Image (cartoon, rainbow, N blue to C red):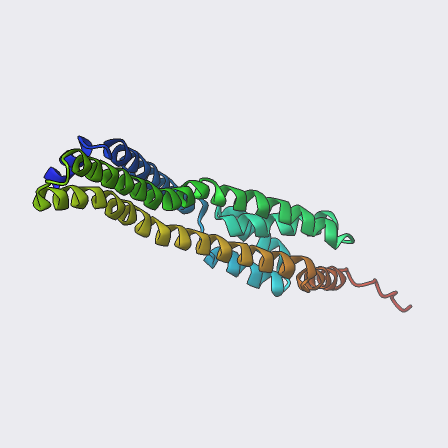
Length: 232
């Protein structure tokens, strides 16, 4: 295999092979960066946010906010922002929803960053491989035409085999990153759906009303009893 690559480097398809190597390194670096970025943003970790949403649905608005604000995952940040918006504009649900949606869009934009690099690599690798094959075939048939047709079939087959290797290398690069890109996009779609559901639950759910009712009942029961006049 190493000998094949060395022969390819010294052929007309050598620059194409170098370009494929660059594409592979770029895609690998981007994939590692995306994994680290997803881990830092807590993509897919919804346990704390779901617990905060449960407390919100039960009427514990303060506890839900504190639990969400203490967590640094993307979904928890959206939950905390939605609760803040509802508290700030209790009579304007659309404004509160827009505030939380803006935070969600910013986080989703960070998740989508550099995904285009992976998609471009997946599309470019097979095309570069095909280009290398075409150039190799041109060189092989050019040698055959210059020799007047007296070409050793073994050498011709070897030249074609080397030319076809770039297509194989391009596919080997593209296929794994194709599945990785699909996985990345699926994770982002699930995160988007979770954020939309959380915003709707907080803005239009009964959590705030239950919290206000519980606070009102607690205030009413905490009122001191009125003094009873003594009888003479």
